[in-house]
Length: 276
Ligand code: HXC
Ligand code: NAP
Image (cartoon, rainbow, N blue to C red; front, side):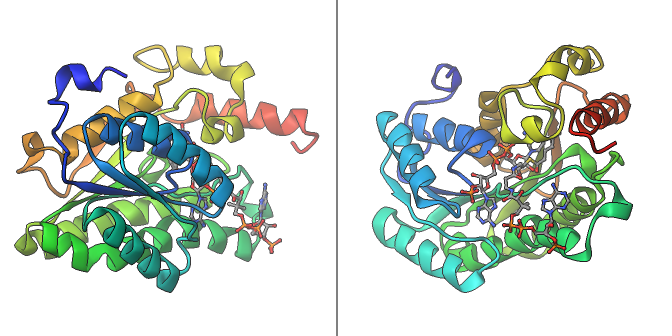
């Protein structure tokens, strides 16, 4: 992790960072980068076992940690867990809304409940977290980071549910930046490109397609979870004190040429599964 070489090691000392979906992948990478800079870290997800393993990793970086299961679709549960996190670590200064669900499926095969499920986790879940954290964010004059995706502004095949949910997240982010600026609360989105070794890329491409897909990315490679963590740290830092209402792409330019390389990989995966 390079982050300590570029930012003061105690930058987030006294700050509580709450990460939804923080038990794995990109979100855990974000949590680790904050932990490396002195933050106390709270994480939630549906599986306590996964959270406990992630908490161990965060503690090795020196962080105080609160890890408690909550489904982001359950607003009351989130409120309770955020209250427990504040009691253990102090009020939330940075909220990262990263919990998400994804599966590739042609729109004509997607059930109404399948569409609803992804919108409920990604979009409603992000609102639930933000709404539940609001009293604490108001107290700390904190900030919110939403983890979006290129599907929010480039149509990807078999991603109608995810595109709708992530586009909704980015618009919600702008609304919250507009309304909550008066409380000193900033809101921004990060759009990760394809990040190596993640569940998202396992579902949307598979490692066997990585080299071919990477060739279509202007910077020629997948990103790392640390690179998303570094962008998150920057957006939450005083360096970004005047940045709110923005979408920051951290994607190696991967969305510039459109979605055809990813579409081909998803189609090849579906064919291999006997679906296409
Ligand atoms: C079609 C599917 C499906 C699939 C589920 N459904 N999987 N439809 N193809 N592969 C449908 C079900 O049939 C059901 O509809 C509805 O969705 C709800 O399914 P459940 O299994 O009951 O949902 P739930 O247990 O809440 O699980 C949510 C989930 C699951 C999203 C379906 O995959 C999950 O927990 N995902 C979390 C991890 C994850 O997805 N990580 C990747 C994030 S990456 P019916 O009509 O049958 O009732 C990402 C962006 C990557 O978001 C971008 C890369 C560039
Ligand atoms: P991941 O490891 O599957 O992360 C998703 C996390 O959310 C998991 O820890 C999961 O844990 C949790 N989660 C899922 N449903 C939840 C719910 N209902 N309530 C609470 N927590 C829930 O996937 P990832 O690939 O790292 O993706 C992380 C984020 O980056 C997502 O927002 C994704 O859309 C975004 N993104 C990823 C990529 C990529 O290349 N991977 C690219 C662009 C954007 P449980 O299952 O235990 O709940």
